[in-house]
Length: 178
Image 1 (cartoon, rainbow, N blue to C red):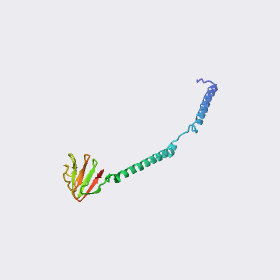
Image 2 (cartoon, helix red, strand yellow):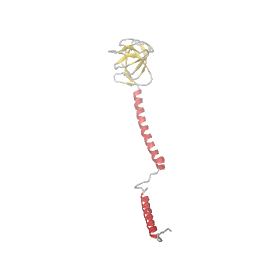
Image 3 (cartoon, one colour):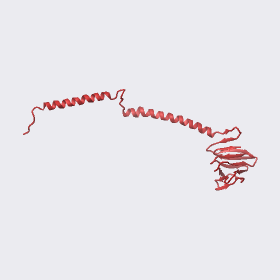
Image 4 (cartoon, rainbow, N blue to C red):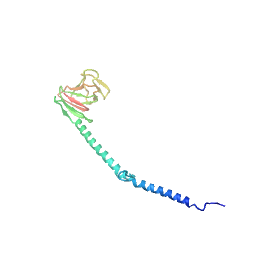
C-alpha cells in the first residue's frame, strides 16, 4: 500500500508561490531589456542596418583615399619641367624621348633605355655603366649603345649621351634630360 500524504496542498502552494516569484522576476527583467537605455540588438538589425552602414563608411573612406592616390600617381606620371629647364618623367610604359647632339638623359636606378634612332654613348664615371639586358653584357662609360638593345641603369649618375643630331630613345622609369 502506498502511503501518500492527504494534504499536499502546502507543497502545491509552495511550488505555486515559487513559480509566481520566478515569473514576476522574469517579467521585471524582460521589462528592462530592450529599452532606450539598454537596447536589444537583433540579428536582422545587424545584417540589415548596422553592417550596411559600416560597409558604406568603409567604401567612402576607401574612395577618398583612392582619389588621393590617383592624384599622386597622375602627378608623378606627368612630365615636370624644373627651373633649370630639364625635363623629368616617370611611367610604367615606355616613352619616346628625343635628344639633340650633346644632350644627356640620366635615369634613376632601374630606368630602362632603348636606342631607336641615331647614335649614343654611355655616360658613367665608373664601371659598370649600363647593363645591356638584351645580351647580358656591361656597357662602360664612353661605349656606344647598340640600336634596339634594352639597357638598364643599375647605379646612380648613369646616362646616355646623344652623339648624333637627332637621337630617339624609348625610356621606361624615372629620368631627366640635361
